Image (cartoon, rainbow, N blue to C red; front, side, top):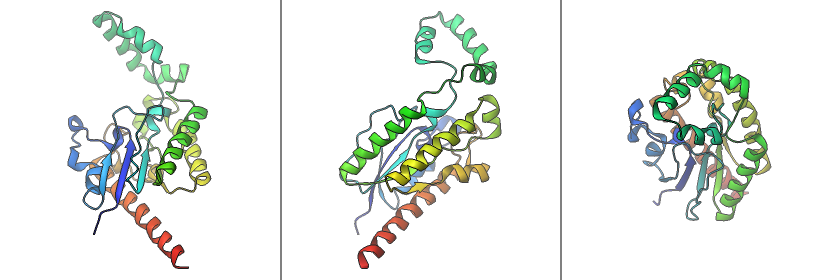
Length: 228
């Protein structure tokens, strides 16, 4: 029997992190590949501002983006460019100060990578491309970060909640399934890696089950409708 083909469009939460002990075979795309034919188009640091190619031969496309868009940032892209031109020693001193007092700087300046209006439009554009390909889009909620991560980044979970509201609205507008990752990580902190914002090995296993359940439920419901 031919496997269902799925594509994953995501950020580092859908990828391995070997230095942190998350190997390729621990990740949810790898685990799902046992059941489905998976193409993982995710990339480290990816946001909805990036371009993603949607492959027409896939039946489902998992959209696992948003954390990079809404997470509190220390520097704007312009400031990052300026820092890159500093002498390495001076750059190290400056970045140390900002990192050490990260909570205060993120509270003072309140920068994000993508504002909510642009985030919504970016998601609509991605969904439109997926719909054009004939695939079913599945939206994954933005993860709930740990208390430790939130205590270092002012308003992190508040931002995440607002951007998840946008995802919820879009999922209803476009009638696409949604994976409730935020709820799960909020009530099951063991799903989070020790950095408080990426998935642990347990988190990847749970995530694989959540996506599997979402896909199979959608297929079952579609089958019931066609039988009526």
